[in-house]
Image 1 (cartoon, rainbow, N blue to C red):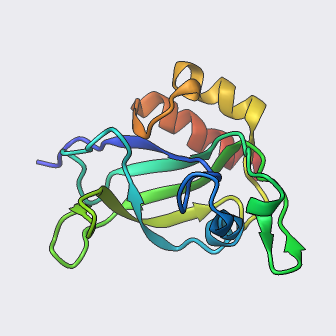
Image 2: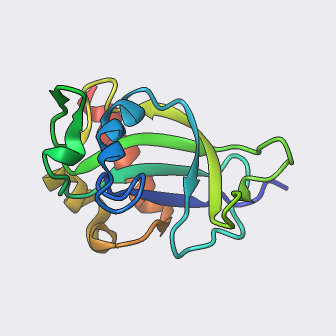
Length: 161
């Protein structure tokens, strides 16, 4: 019997990726644009029942990076617009688990990108993200979302294309 799929929202705060207000946070734009596979921190939620084949989204919140935190060398990257940037599928790591602890004891989930909306220049803007996520839009932590919400996001993406 096939087990029920979990659906998750992974939050990205560009100003905290490498630490609060780190100048390395200028790299976030390129990382998200080229994202294929990643170990994402789960924040306060542990995702203990996450398994291979579960699906999720990456939502970028308001980008509060200063100019210094968006500058690499002599180039300043644009602030990211709030919205949905990718659809992901959770996959097992080498140890056969999706949820792992990194060297600092931080829980991380491993995934591959199914659709990189940022790379496709097709992110879901803030207004539509707010409408699609409903009450989950204001979450400050990565969390599970309902199947209905995930399917409405998937339908919205497919209708745009």
